Amino acid sequence: MRLAARALLLAGLVSAVPGPAAAWPAEAMTALSRDARKLLPRSLSRLLGEREPQVLEELQRFPPDVSRALAQDLPTGKLRPETVEALQAQVSRVVELLREGQVEGGLVRLGGLLRISADLADPVLAAGPEGWPPGVTREYYALFVANLHRMPVVLDDASALELGTKDLPGLWRSLLERSRDQAPVIRVELFRDGRVVDHRRLDYRSPAWAVSSLAYSRAVTGAAATWLAAWRESRGDTTRAPRAREVRPQAPGGNLAEDRRPPSPEAP
Image (cartoon, rainbow, N blue to C red; front, top):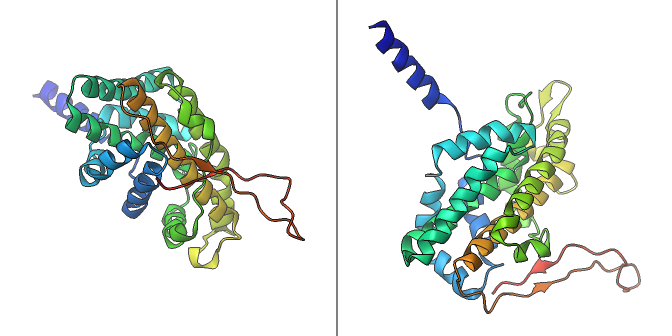
């Protein structure tokens, strides 16, 4: 009886190990998927768009072991080799399904890879071992949702869209490292004098607003890059890809400023 009780207790503890919370609000995940599709060749964008409900469901079925590995790594800002290997296995499985002609399952699994970039690009999940004061994440996501329609979506790194599957670990590490670097801004902006700051007191001039906007564009770019790498390796159609449009601010007097903003993708 004692052995059985211990076995049950151990099983309960293992099952209770958390994976990364599906922290992005549901409406953000839908918007993220749609914006990432704008960076894809027209045929792939259409195929994923036709399966949007199934893809969104797939995001909730991310393998528990991979979720637990991410949950362990995200607060540290570093991906362990075994976590990278598990993520690469997810990509390899998608490529395998598509090459075998299992198009429906392969496309849905491909769409589900969005979860990787969404988690890695989220600074809330990279808070560090100290975590967040109660209420901070609630106000951060409330700020994000309230302003999502106002946030410019820019291409975080145009070269990422040319990566092969072997290059994805470098991209994923970069997403997480930048999230970890930006996480302290959220704490400073949303927790002052021992109290949580109401998100309604912040607007587009807030550094926390800027962090959420950058994180969203980072997630969009990372998702599209991961999709494209797997799609190319599975010999999918990459023609009719959208062209990135570079946007530069106007300097006083109507001359183009010398500094450049990241390119903004045109919808296919």
